[in-house]
Image (cartoon, rainbow, N blue to C red):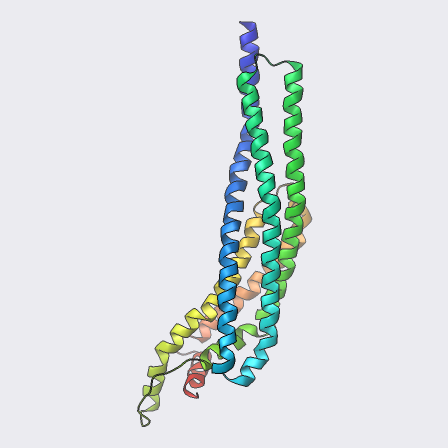
Amino acid sequence: EAKQSTKETFARRSTVALAPARKRLRRDTATIGNVHIGLRGLTSTQRIIMKRAESFQDLSDQNEFYAASNMLVKFDSAMMKIQRILSEYLSTAKEYLQRRQAAIRELQNNLKISECGSEAMVQAAQIRMAEMENAEKKHMNVLTGAFQDMAENLDHVADLLVNGGLLAHYLYLTASAVKLPAADAFASLPGRFARAEEPLRAALLAGPGGFLGQVDQAFSLSQSLADMWVSEAKALENDLRNLQSAWSNVRSAAKELRRQLQPTGTLRWMLLLKVLDR
């Protein structure tokens, strides 16, 4: 009876000790799965954005296109780097999940077949736990590097959009490429503005709207990486601060654009004139 009591006590304590490991595994599996899905979306959307940008060369104002083309190349380069960073991280993360899951499963199986909490079995369990901790440390090292590289590239993207003026250029490129149906040459100016409203709105949603959505997705993926921090959080505080500052700048710029695109906004009328000027 005493022997059974010892076994049950050890099994219960071991199960409790494994609970945080299982919980962490479930959380990390979900987060890494979201990163994988997000990366696929990021890759496909980037191809669409750059294909649309290339079409502007023949349809839009040439001066506007060449003013933005260099920044578009830099933007694409930064986004491609982000995709590579995430792809390389996911390779390591997948291995980490597999090893951690295998170690937890082995520990659980050992609990089921063990007859008592012998010193040898306790030592074996400690070894398995140590192996899980080592796997986590390796993963965290890779995660830290990936987040730092992501933060650097996203800061560059934010700088291109806001300070470099890429977002504004992209708006004008989109407007200058809008095609309008034939209309009465003697139509009034208010009538011509009204005719341009819907095509411009649709173009802005598909163009700059998708453009900003892509940037938002990239920042969201960086947050997914940040959510996985444990002890490394303090070491990455500066990177996190820089990333939050970059995102704040992008949000402020987007908010200002939305304000200027309201019915009384100056930018809205400038874009409408750009459409009608074709």
